[in-house]
Image (spheres, rainbow, N blue to C red):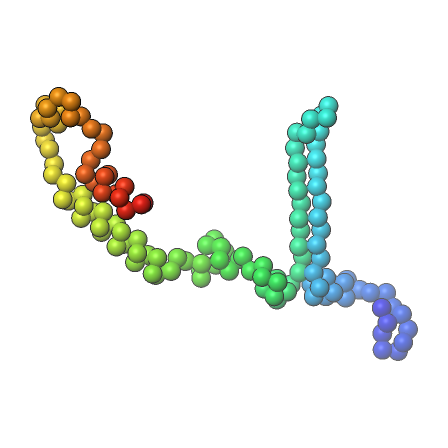
Length: 128
């Protein structure tokens, strides 16, 4: 590298790190373990070293959305409200299903055995 006086100087570790973090560094490699021409193990290594600013610039900000690394990665309140509404609807359906304390096989005439319930049939019509 050239300094202000025009002479060359040896780059320091800080200069190298500054350039690597500013531009980025990609290391890629494959390790394959074979025995008698049979591949037993393949390890693919992909490493990107750059600054946080550079990572965000190129769209690699996964740590913002990881629920273990960021408190901002909580599910949206809309999603939670929708789940609460679905749960309430399911609970209401369950309350409407009559409870039979007797053996259902005794009350059904022969030949009318089915494996489905009104609740399951209704669920199937909604596609989910």
